[in-house]
Length: 418
Image 1 (tube, one colour):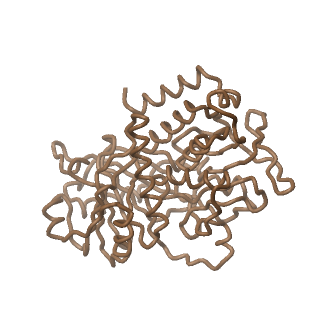
Image 2 (cartoon, rainbow, N blue to C red):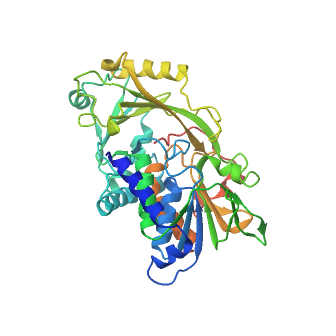
Image 3 (cartoon, helix red, strand yellow):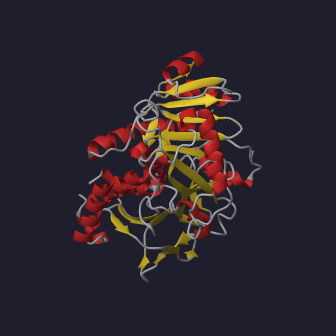
């Protein structure tokens, strides 16, 4: 039985043998509960937020319509990159640094494989100011990174065609995270710790006197809580169409997994790091994660997409583009067989940054989103960050506040991918 099936079977067993009620949550935690909080969405942001709220002594109900890491979720799929280079955005570097610590801590504590340190190689076809400005911030945060010469890269990674590339950077602690598996492990440990999980669709009830009154669930029941946290990814604007109109836009993204040449181990994760090719387009990939094949994806934002009803069959044009890129940059992969493909989505905010703020009309309700395509790796730190604000330990950070959308935004394209 592989690691993911083990987690899934363990979780199903845990749920089937223990009714997930608020009463159970209370009896499984020591001491009196500080209050009741409902978290909607069991992905990277919601699952970790629910777990950290529980650790802070609150009674927490976590709800998700399709389940943790499901194939419609932005936190689904097999792998996500974790890296520290983030341009001048120190706030993200600090969150990444904290997330590295938490991924390692919980990997050891839960005895699960959550983080695979392959390193990350960045190569730039264009100006490398994005990496140059980030390098001192990253290193100050304790994430060892360095610029490499072309000669060093040629010797170390002969499997890469370096033509057209100007500069190179290497992150020592970077790697990848098995996304779906991680979501399931977080949920499993949330439930073990006394949290309540319900797999149901959620509709917010009425807002009265600047407060959300209740949740209406798809089984006909209602749920009341002191506070509500909506971390439902690409569905966030659908849940609150008036307050969040045009702020979260899901886009269709395609990912391909190609087979490496028979008997050639040079493109396995033991000999090839996570990589990012920064040019007019930004391509990135993960070699061999969970033996799925050589992952390749174009970070360019796709067309608008409905995460519930959208067809998830990759396009012929997307496959053709990926093959063309692969043949140029990794010559031994020319004519490589396609093993798998996935259609997922980013949920983009207008400036590419996250949203962590109160609903403008309900002071007891939080909206958390805009994480694609760079939010998964920060899940543990974002969970802490959100929990601190929901329980009142810290104030809203304007960098993630909704008020910024009332101002003229610089909507230039920026790289925030996986």
